[in-house]
Image 1: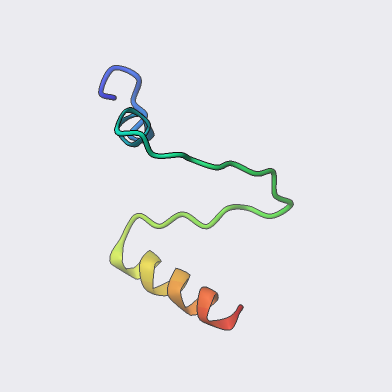
Image 2: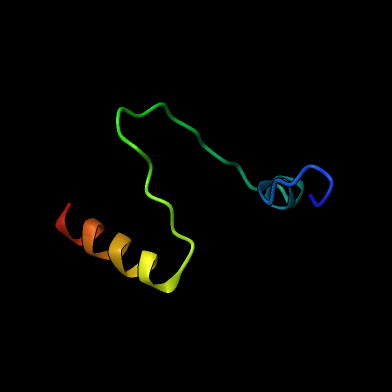
Length: 46
């Protein structure tokens, strides 16, 4: 994980499945508490 700089490797090594999809919009990054609140507001609207 550290060498590859990809935190998803830990989840994959623990047996989790990760899905991916192509989208036509810029993905929403959630890196801060403020980002999380914004994401929650967007999800509440959908």
